[in-house]
Amino acid sequence: MTSATTPLAPTTPAATVTTRRPRGRRNTEALLLVAGYGLCLLAFAQVALVLDGRLTTAFAVFAVVLAGCVLVAHLAVRRLAASADPVLLPTITVLNGLGLAMIYRLDRADGRTGLSAASDFSAQLGWTVLGVALFVAVLALVREPRLLQRYTYTAGFIGLALLILPLIPGLGVEINGARIWVRLPVGADSLSFQPGELAKLFLIVFFTGYLVEKRDVLALARTRVLGIDVPRGRDLGPIVVAWLASLGVLVFERDLGTSLLFFGVFVAMLYIATERWSWLVIGSVLFVAGSALAYALFPHVQTRFSVWLNPFADEAGSGYQIAQSLYGFATGGILGTGLGQGFPDFVPYASTDFIAAAFGEELGLAGFMAIMVLYAIVVERGFRTSLAARDSFGKLLAAGLSIEVGLQVFVVVGGVTRLIPLTGLTTPFLSYGGSSLIANWMLIALLMRISDHARRGVVAPGGPPARSTSSEPAVTR
Image (cartoon, rainbow, N blue to C red; front, side, top):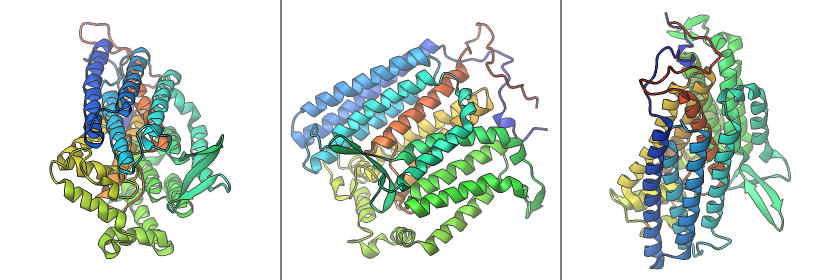
């Protein structure tokens, strides 16, 4: 009989496992990076030639900075995580590069030059450099993923503190109806960032450590109601706390996207940790109840639902943004208008919340689906890493990070295509925004560290037997 916690148990390294040698993986990564870098250059060149009639200084700066970032990231992985997944870094390089090209295109549509101090492109290029620097820092500092388990409750405290930070008077600011920003004075200017983006990473580390520690208790079921195994009442505490915390984010910060993401990731990780599908049922019931309560009590939630159900009822007002997004997708058709040849700037906040609609118009359904495939690759490689991990903490952490990326993309794309109500989240790596970009670079670094740790010491047939670095006992099925 298989235990309910078997999926999180370490794999017994009793036999030699077939895999690529580290050098081969890094050479594969290098070839993919060259191809991805070339694709980004072609995209930016297309935009520059259409809008400027020539390859501008901005193109040269983009080419040099992106090449430097790619080279530094690759050398860092080669030195610090030689056995890591060879596909993740090239994939996010393409996403980041395409995002920079589209942000430059939208800057030009708004009349801003590419390298001016007021341009989003210049700022995003700087955030990319910082994101890669933090990517390298995470690889250098986190040498063993399981060491993070020691800081489970510290990570939870930091995550909650970051979520609460925008509510502090004089520090948090409200933008577009949501109080999710913190503004700090930096010289004569001010720096704005979203602490919630970093909070997601800390909270996932907390969820992982807590669920690994408590999964045996959470997997117990005392009663059966309508064919569903219902956990003990005292074991419902974690999911109730997560539900109340997500409602708090929705109520006090008016951030529907982070609230949905926060609760969805926790419920999915809880299901993976326990293998009890009753947690999915309970989570769904709590989500529906919370949504109904929020709709009944808060006007801004009612507005979001009204716009979702019929954006054309007030097309010039509250429904303008989503209506323009749908028009953009319709204009793009199958193959799109071509980079630089559409009107994505008609959509308000096209470079942040609605950059997916900009790509849908100019690359068409074919190009948009290709971008979705890139995200699918990131999620698939993340789950592949989870399966390869040799300890419970690494398995669940990799799964949680992958779920976070996949769910965020679903929420964003579902919102701009009117599949679900609009939430206001950014598209990972594509959208303008430093907080999101650096947090996602750090997320990828954690995935690559887990991948490297999972495959470290595992060699091809004919080599010495692989040895486990896990101190956990093997599980006999």
